[in-house]
Length: 107
Image (tube, rainbow, N blue to C red):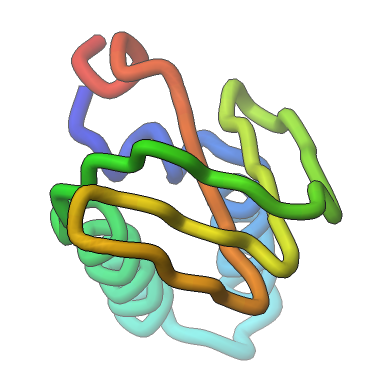
């Protein structure tokens, strides 16, 4: 499965597809424009997937503000987080961690 298909089948991807279908059916949007919207959606998702930063975290500490599990994807939001690595320590207002099972990406 292509990586973007995982996101197309997510809640937001399905809602986007349904909305575009309704807009095309009611004549608000042409099918060509709907396809362009989906292509842009895939490009944005690809940027998030293929931009990778190698960080070895020795410690991640902060206040867990929000967590959720939806469509096999975990999302954690930490506030007042301290990131300690070999290079030093950084304190940030907010950190968002998104994680999914890597096996889902290769199916």
